[in-house]
Length: 333
Image 1: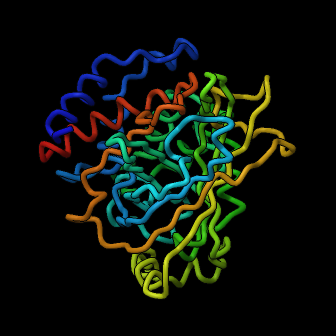
Image 2: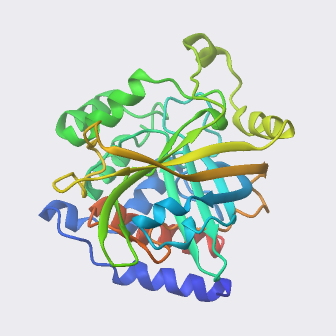
């Protein structure tokens, strides 16, 4: 699809999306409000993303395991290598955010399937998200808007946000107990949301997925947090790749009837079945300007046949919000 046709499609989505009911307050939040709040909090950087602005592009491939085709007819799991465009990122709209910031790390993937279709995944290295509704996500952004006098968020306002939004607690607690990684290669990345696999017989199965690094998981020490340079993740990734490819195993968790499917802030029981579904291999990385990932929107609702979204209000909200942000940066705003 030509780039301008893709832009028209996502702008149409931004104007016509209907959110799945969650509660009256959440339904009042519009995607453009969230994008505007991000701009107010982090400023506007023309031609750049409004969120996860700081990132690094990478390319590689994914080989899915045919055994997963018991649950899904998706071509992702044909057993053949699928080319992948990847983007590692730090959240927020500050392009100069320190790599030691105690915040999630992101991994977004575009799978280019042999029939010309695409599949996107947008993940974080936290097993839960910080909001169960778009309203909580918006309130979090607003709470972090800097005060004019200090240029930093008001701690009292941030505390008030958490006190009023219990659905933000699990995510905040995870971040308080885990330091950021020393390398993007040393994080697991979680799909956060629940999705549906659809089999050849049209049977639906609830699933969640994560990508587990074969390099092993690691965290910065408290001493490193205070001594590391502000920008080390990109150089560390490029240097690691000089020694050879980096691999992650895709692990799919199979849900059961009654498992939470529309709330990304809640974990499933630990006894759910895990299946190795394939391996992601990254072979090279480069600064994002002019690289393959720079213009990719990574819309999480771009899915191959055999994978469907749930009615998670945050998942459904992300697509039109991404479309507005993409439209702005595509036009140089």
